[in-house]
Length: 292
Image (cartoon, rainbow, N blue to C red; front, side, top):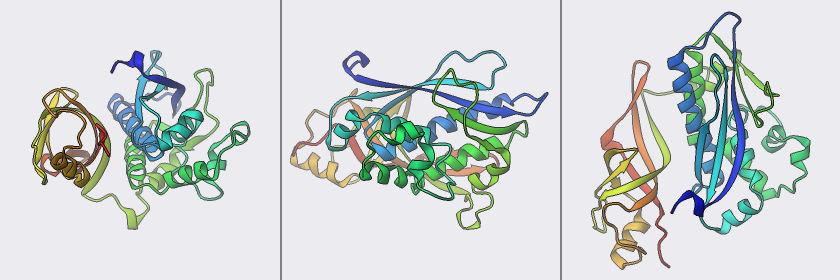
């Protein structure tokens, strides 16, 4: 299905680095921070709707700029029980994305009230909407992504703060997270949640099926993502049962596009985290959807 056949909701966004006078941001840190930022936004939005297709595009970065204008494209394929409400009030997804920087480490008050402007607070946020936003702050995957982002920023002393604005015209975000808060937000000062030598990552991937294992028990399937082939154990019990009962609504063959929730282990080697390829597990198949 092409983009022209999908409903789109687009948000403007700017990731903004505060930089010490006379200093420049290290290119390697900036590149890794942008990747970590994308992972953080995706993890945050996935807490609102795990089936959401989200594309993040960089738009018009000026030479020497510490501002990274972006477009967040929310692509809608079909209305679902939760999706209907979000499609009717798509701002909730934008609000969730905007909360990515500030929601972790909030110390008081409602998370929803803390991240919304007064004009947005009156847009009939239901109790369920507010509960969803509050849930984000407790999400393990969001916490992991947030810690990774701030840990990367800590590696460049030139970066004195970071913020996000929801308009390209806004020269500076309303809220800047100062460098003094980076250690707390990266988990450095939280002994109970200290980043271990290995960590479990949960993510939503769009993949192309290369070789299925059409068995009703966990087995390795082969997929392709961004041109790279990998294996992952299929551990979605409902999907495996549907294979046995013939409730998968299409023929699973090479080239079929699937959306899956994947878990894997990353191991630390110095400053580098690398994926253990044997640890990849498909814990839930989000698309194709199973027949009743």
